[in-house]
Image (cartoon, rainbow, N blue to C red):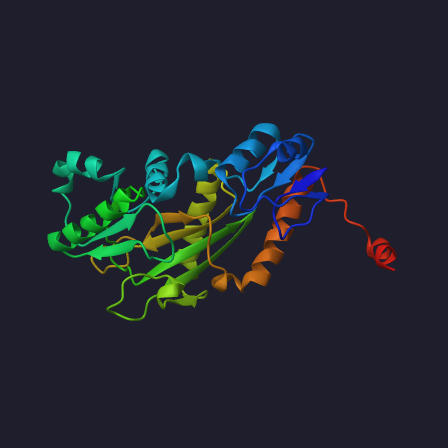
Length: 293
């Protein structure tokens, strides 16, 4: 029996767990399932319940919950030696103050990322110590409300565009997000960036190869990776991809919209099941017609 908690993937048994804590009925269903399909918005407790009680779970969110937030992702990149911009990780303001010596070695411009948030809303460009102090005050206010942790990162030349590599099962798709407004910082579509799926195919292939290798190490099989290339004129070396972050929730505009995304996701889940020697027992069109007549 294949069990789905995903509202858009119909399996042999289907349960919705949105907005509630998983319970004994969920556990009982998981224990008799041959495979479990989880939603992108999966809670950590549901993921843990599935992983501990079923051998086959899609997507694999072990890395997501073991290395949570932007601070966790930065530590994951560092732990695996994955190429990324020079990065400093701070769990809270107290950690930052203890590491003030290493902070003094930083040179501007820098990128400041709060541990949470998407679409670039919690990412800030710092040009000076004054910018840093103002942003630290903001981080301290968030910390007083229970949200803590941030990352400081060296700004990579060429930051007017980043590459999104979407990983959906075994399929990888890559496209640029380009910020044409010279005074605007950030390349999210929500901040006005445009999508370019055609430019520099050689760089896109490099990034996809790097991402595929990273996914083999981490078993990540559903995420949007953001990468950047140093495209300054000051280097004679060929540009190489650098990881910026991992988005377990990611936009679908560059993938052709939600309908196309869900069609790809369904196809990849079915391929994953076939690889396990499993399949959803869906009724034939004739059987379905008979049930509705």
